[in-house]
Image (cartoon, rainbow, N blue to C red):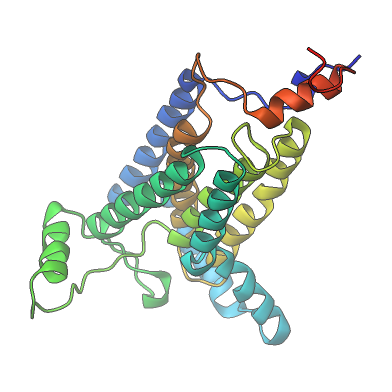
Length: 266
């Protein structure tokens, strides 16, 4: 006899999510520091750029590469996540799905902007790799944003890859919104499969923004790490267990079916 626990996903413990969040944040901090000081993490940046720059795809291959890289654009990622969150809420999952999406998107916007402006790295297209880090960059950006008539911010904002970060947040979170404990169709096996499939667009976007010479290699790596950080923050909102949380009605009915007990017989 199969227990419903074999079908319904178990929400991860907050301590586990917080532990992985600390690991991802530490890795992102280390990569950022390496980029600022020109450490070993950046050693492959220039050789990879020198290899891909004269070998850009053409014709249909270029179209396919650009279209795939655009899976990391906010024009695609934001409607996808918000739509799934609203769908989950309409199926009685409460505030958590939308709260998780807004938390993830908001965290990414804030952290991503601070890193891009604060590090001040040039993109590969300029054929020079320099950084000009500092809080002054952020002050200048805020001034340009808020003061009417102020000149636009003219610093460089290549690090980290926003497309890679968007993808790393969006597609795993979409899997959780579909099949997680607070998702549209909670199902443990489907969640594992969807999470595995979600790594494909995450990897493709990060690789292609490097192959297309939009970003240095280390910027794609940092983008993945940034996306992982904000994904874990979002999961703390979406899936963290609460001891007194009652099972949703759809889960209670499913548990009765899986136990060969007709709903309402208890």
